[in-house]
Length: 222
Image 1 (cartoon, one colour):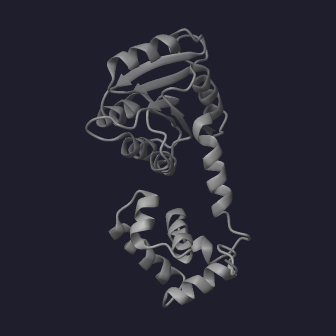
Image 2: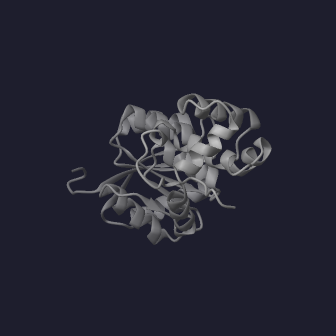
Image 3: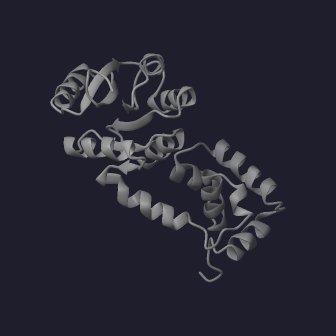
């Protein structure tokens, strides 16, 4: 309860001043929303989120000093009750995945409608997640694709990224192919592979493929 009425308090984070001004102007026309602060760098966003304690942070990803993903991690580490909505020009899977892993509750593209942003704010305030219509379909498809056929205690030992690497290795993909598909380095793929082998107590690729078949990650028949 601020300014004498109930309103959702917003912190806007973007280093493009014209975009920031337009966003602020549009939001200020909404009677139940209040812009209580703005930031143009990641570190400034972390500091102002701590000082102002907003309900929602609207976060760009490509900002100076500290990128939006890391800024989101730090903001939520300081105050887990803050809801972060990414508002970015990037719709690629790697950006969306990393932002959600950092704790963001919403992800919108800058060419989405303003009404989508209003819907996202309402959704995260109600404890739900909101994704841009541009990316929601493939996020759901990927979730279903990586969902195990049953709750395997073994698979639960793996992180989501390790599960992706396990599947791609079992499908016969080379390290370079996996790195390109996931948007990570070959060295990182090697590291994930080692962790998968250790966590699942597997000795070689034959064991890995056998495990993947048993868990329904891949089919025994081509």
